[in-house]
Amino acid sequence: MLPAVCADSFRRHGNSAVPLIGCRFTARGVSVDVVIGADNAATRDFLSMLPLTLTLEEFSGREKIGYLPRKLDTTGSPGSDPEDGDLIYFVPWGNIGFYYNTAGIGHSDQVIHLGTYQATTEQLTKLQGGDVTVTLAG
Image (cartoon, rainbow, N blue to C red; front, side, top):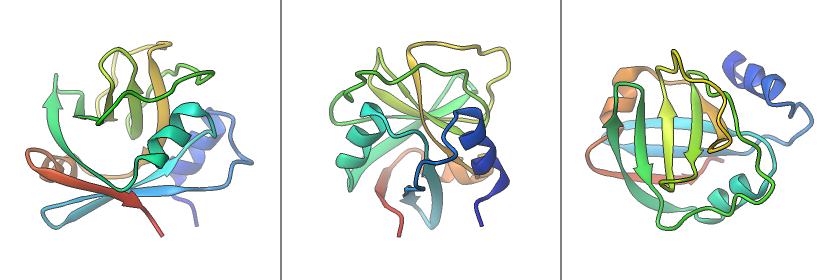
């Protein structure tokens, strides 16, 4: 069964008919699964990079971010109004972000929704500061 937050994300982003694809972020004994959202250039390009290793860091008390090895193709990928529990791609910097505090953040064409996750802030904190393995979830 799809977690409620993931199902809500698909309804929010208009993707109820998109097949569910997941990826897993793993480090220091914790794994965070992400249900990938819409089928667009950015999500396809992100998935094509897997498996990969990256480092996550805290950013501004709002998200855990990590820089991809290269910028994603964002052709035709819509911006978003991020919510807590969203994995996003920030176009100008070429990074992904696990949002956990989106209060006061509105829609931006520069923030592309990649997927939705369920994790505590503690789990996200365990992912930061070292190598994080990102793989397709089976």
